[in-house]
Image (cartoon, one colour):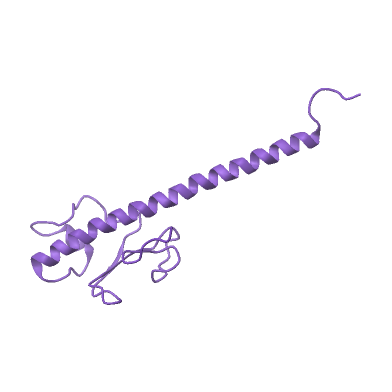
Length: 130
C-alpha cells in the first residue's frame, strides 16, 4: 500500500519550485537595486547640472572639471560629498559637449565601462528607456 510521507519525486519537485521562486525574488530585488542606482545617478546629475549653470552664470564660462564646483571661495557643491554615481564611480564630464550641448555628463552605469553613452551608461541628455 501507499505509505505516508513524500516520494523522492515530490520532494525534488518542491525543491525545484522553491529554487525558481528564490531566483525570481532575487532577480526582482537585484533589478530594483539597479533601478534605484540609476534614479540616484539621475538625481545627482540634476544637482550637478544646476551647479554647472550657476557657475556659468557667475563666471561666463563652464568649469574645466566638475571638481571645480566644489572649490573656490563660494563652492557650488558641498566639498564633503563625493561626485560619484549610484555605483560609486566618478561622473564623466567634458565641455564643450557633443551634439551642440554646452557640456556632456555621463555615468558609466553598472558595468563600469564607458560605452559612449550606449550600453548601460547614463547620459544626462538622454532619458532612460524604461
